[in-house]
Image (cartoon, rainbow, N blue to C red; front, top):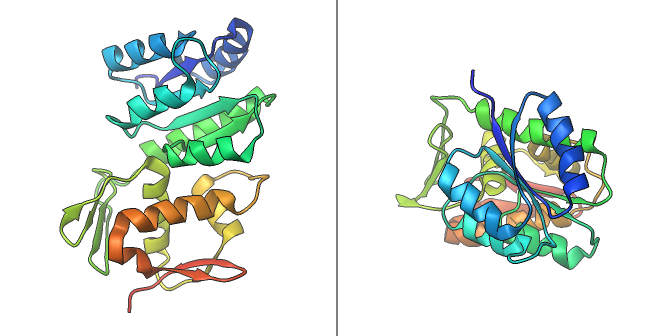
Length: 225
């Protein structure tokens, strides 16, 4: 089986070497870029990258712009690295379709664990898994969503979140349970992560966004009347 390819983008060579060594040890193929411009060249020329690890602060083209350009053409999972801990940066990342957001300094082992969790979910999608409810149809193999017959473009994490809601139709889900199930790691944050994704998911679903009910003080429930 071919190794999964990861594009690692960071202007600090020591950081790239540290992360690369851990990823290679875990049997991933790693390609590197030292700035955003080079990252975009590699991504679009190779066209076979399975996941992107992207630093925010970089010369020439910053991480936000790289993320925007990749997201315009691809749903490839993106993990954003930043030295800042400003929640506005984190929220911007999620708005742009970032799947994970990790502040420096971080443990390379934790980063690899998150990479593995994302790629495991990506590769284990059931080939014949279809979900349908309330005029919404999810094809997990094709990674596509249709609402009342119209294709709706979702980010990787929005797709995972909607799938989880539909698989647990009618069940009240706490934010903690959603984090553990959809993000698949111990998340040391707060509800902003989920609430931001739900808000964007609802807006993309139009009127069908109302099927995702807010349970105040607890979490959410997907409910078809």
